Each structure stands twice: as C-alpha cells, then as structure tokens.
Image (cartoon, rainbow, N blue to C red; front, side, top):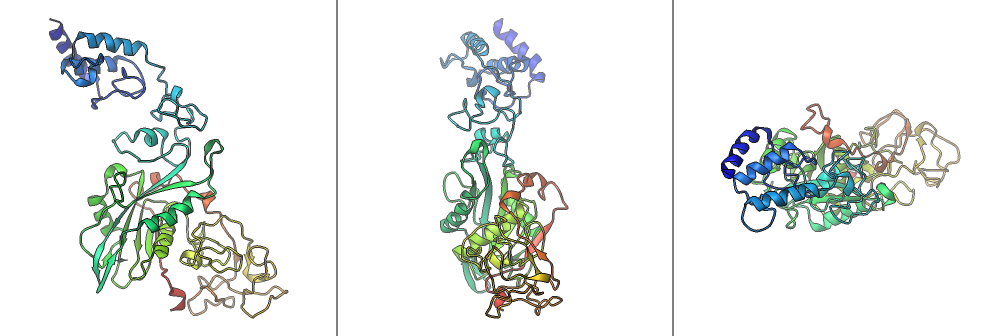
Length: 441
C-alpha cells in the first residue's frame, strides 16, 4: 500500500517538477530541485526519485532505497542552511564570505550582493560550479578576472609551403604573461591582472582546441569561419569563450593581413601566412583579441599609426612591441597602452617634450627643434609627411590633428560576450591590414 501511494503521488506531482538532473544541491542535499529553496518542488522530486528507486535519494547511504531514506531526507531538510541567494549567482549568501579569500564551496570569498564579484562578465556560480549547461570553466577564479579563448588551427601544405599554425606553449606563455601583470584591478585589493586561458588542446583541462580538417588557402570571414565554428565549437561555450581560427589567409589567396576580428565580439582569426613565429603570433593574438574586447587601432578610435599611442593595437607597435624609452620606436615588449603619453599636436609639433617628456627628433633632421612646426606624424615607422600628404600611402591620413594616447587596460569591455556576433548581427568586423615588414615594402 505505501509503495502504491508513493507511486500515485509521483504521478500527481511530476507535473510540478522541472528538475531533470539526478543530483542534489552542493549546499543542501534536500534541495533536489536545485533552486536554492526548500519547497513543494523538492518534495515532489524526492517522491519521483524514490518511486523510481533512484540512487540519488539513498540518504541513509545503505545502498537500498526504503522508508529509512524518507526519514534521512526529512533530517537533511530540517538541518539545511538558509539558501537565500540574493544576487542569483547560484551561491547562497551564507557561502559568500565577502572577504576575498576562497576556501571552499561554503566560504567562497565572493560578494553575496554582486553576481559577478570580479566584474569579468562571468557570474561567480559559473566560475565555481560550472554553467547550468554543464560546461566546466577550468581554473576560473571568481576573485580574479578571466578571459577564455578556444584556438582551432590548420596544418598542412599551403601554396607550396608546409605550415603548422597551432599556437605553441611559448606563444601562450608570452601573451599569458602580458595579461597576468596588467594594471587591471581585482576586488578586495587583490593583485592586479587578468588570467588568460588559451585552449589549444594542450592538456586534460583544455581539450576544445583542435586541428581543423584540410588545408584551405583562405577562409572567408565571417561566413566560412562560422561554418567551421558551427562544426567544431561546443555551443555551451558561447558567451564564455572567444573562438579563434589560426589559418593561412582570410578572404582571398593573396591577402597578407595578419588577422581579422569582431569589435566587441567573440570571433577572430590569426593568419600568419609565411611569417609565423612566437613573437608574430603572440602579438597578433593579443592584437585581434584586443578588438574583441573593444579596442581599435587608435584605442578608442580607428586612427592608426599614432606616434604616441603605445599599444600592440597600433600597427606601429604590433610586431615591434611597445616603446619603453619614449623614442617612439618599439622595444619588443608585448603590452596594451597604459595611457601615459602626452598629446602630440601635429599642427604644432613640440620636439622638446616628445611623447613622454623627453626630446624626440620627430622629423629626423638630426637635431631637436625648439620651435613648433607642422608635420603629419602618424605614418609608418621612421617616416613623416607634410600636412596634407600621406607620403605615398605610408600614412594613416593626410591631416594634421591632435594625437592622443589611450588607456587600453582601463577600457576593456567586460560585457562584450553579451554583445557578440551571435547575439547582434550588426557587429562590426575590422580587418587588420598589417604584416611584418609591411612599412618597408
């Protein structure tokens, strides 16, 4: 009779139960409905599982599902902590210790009033528990900003050349270090920096990155790109990972461009053609990822080759690295701009203060001019032009303007994955018409 009663109750209550996972809450085993509350839905779920002899309701750990489990379940119910989750991040308030110290699932250090404590666009519950779709964000930290990128690549024979465009560990280390020491604050006065996760299939935690089939000369961005993405990118990663394809060329078989990307999006390509190297690839990854996180070739604007915009986003410093001694020449360091440099007025160039309070011979006449003059400076490395001239196409523009630096790190768009191509069809795509040695061709 009791079993028939439970079966009848299960049929009656199943319409009210939406829980499909045969599991229990990590904070309260009685919360079978996984909604951070104890109510009728949990009783319904218990009855259904009990009637189905589901092992998840063996609350007395006897190996047998019987009425002793009913008693054990009721005990779990009465001893369950308060499951109030004010910020809706799937971590109960009692477990969010709000002190910046992660100890365990019941003392996470996170803010109970803010769903995304570190402000990186990923909720605390997703970083700690994985997503509701079952995606585990390996090594994510709710107290430190994270960026995830899946890297798929081609390998083979391309236009008579044998190439492997898979990122190497050396590439990863170079760009990882640049993000790790970034002047980007984290909560609770924890150390600055961003943890960059590049998945190129390198270990048991990073298995999404893989070699793509074939050896196409060029991939259309974004139509052909999206076909590969649909086939090889786990849809559960959408909204959490950027997706990058490493290939020979994009759009046509003579395009030497190093890459292409969405602005404020989640997709980009790195196309190394025949100049693949650790430095070139790492710098280009950071450049194209920079577009995804909201940066342009002039920082906040599209004005390129600014002599004082000290960033890998600037063609002037993409492959050469940023300028460390204020002489406007790259010194090999991979970095975004910190926004430290002076404005430079091309219609009244002052060589005595240069770009960072040190004299610079902008017009390359062998001396520091003390009187201001007009000169178009946002040209290829080592060149300038008169105002109104673009030096036979070597300058970004022909006008004399005020050139400004920009603080890239301070202006990362942490909500860009909500604005990506997959959500907003009008996303802007920016081709990057730069490659090593271009300014000397």
